[in-house]
Length: 359
Image (cartoon, rainbow, N blue to C red; front, side, top):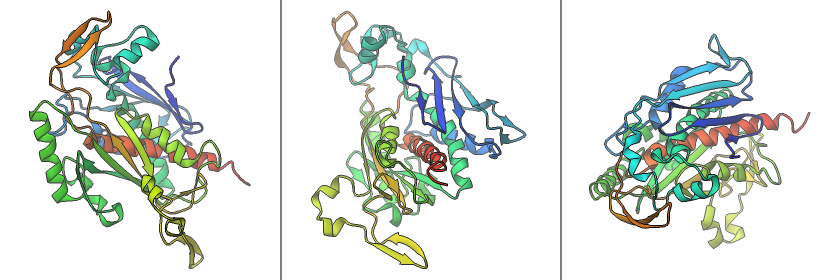
C-alpha cells in the first residue's frame, strides 16, 4: 500500500497520475454550512497551473475544477467533497524513451524497487502534477480558515543565490502576484526572472526558497508531543515534490544565538498577551502562541535538465539519457500556492482538533 491521505479530522485523499485521464481529491471532515466559493478555488488553481508564464513549463492545462459531491446550493454538506481535474494536454508519447530508463534524482528507480511496476509517463503519481489536487483541497481549507480570520500567504524569497534581504514583515505581500516569479520585492524579482531564463536557455534548472506566513492564528493550535504544529507543518512541506529543507521562526540561525537574545519576551498590551520578538515563529512547545506563524521551504533544482546525463536502465545497462518534454526550469514560482495549500490544510485540521482539547 501507499499513503495517499493527509490529515486527521480535516483530511484529504488524492488520486490520479500525471498523464492519466484525471487527478483529484476527496476532502473529508469539512464542517457543514461553509460557503464553497468555486471562483476562489479556481483562482487558486490558476496560480499553480502549468503554462502560466514564460518561466514555467509550457504544458497547457486549464485545471478547471469539477465538484462531484459534498456541496449543495453553494454550501458544504458535511459529507466528503470530491473534486476532479481533467488532464487535457497530456502527451504520454513524450516519455516513451523513459519506459526502461532511470532518470537521475527522480523517483523512477525507487518506485520500481518499491512497487515493481510503475507509470513512466511523466513520473506517474510521483509527478508534481499531483499537487494540483492538493491546491484544490487547500482552497477549501483556506475558506474555512477565512471564516475564523486566519490568512496564509507565501512568496518566493530566493532563487539560486539571488534573494531579497527584506523580512516578510517589511514587504507588501499583496504585491506577490505582481510579477511572474512571485517575489514581492520588484528589483529582486527581475534578477530572479533573468536567472531562470538564463538557466532554461542553457538547458539547466535552479532551486530556491518559498517563505510562508500565517496570520490571525489563535493561541492553542497544535499538540504538545508528537503532533507539534511545527512537526505537522514540516511533514506537510517535506511531502511536496523537490522540497529539501524546512525551518520555522529563527530556524538554523538559532544555533548561533544566546538564550538571552533568542527568548521571546511576553508583554500584556490591553489584555492581549503577545511577544516583543518572534524567534519562535509563532509556536512554542508545539502549540501556536497567537503570533504570526512563519517558515521557509527550500526547493532543489528541478531534476529534469535538458542536458545529456549518464544513467542506467532497468536491466542495469549504462545509458546516456537525453530528456524531452515540457518542464519547469525553476519550480518555486508555481510552488507558492502549493506551500500555502499544505499550510492551510495543517491549520484547518489543527483548528478542528483544538475543539476537542477542553470544555
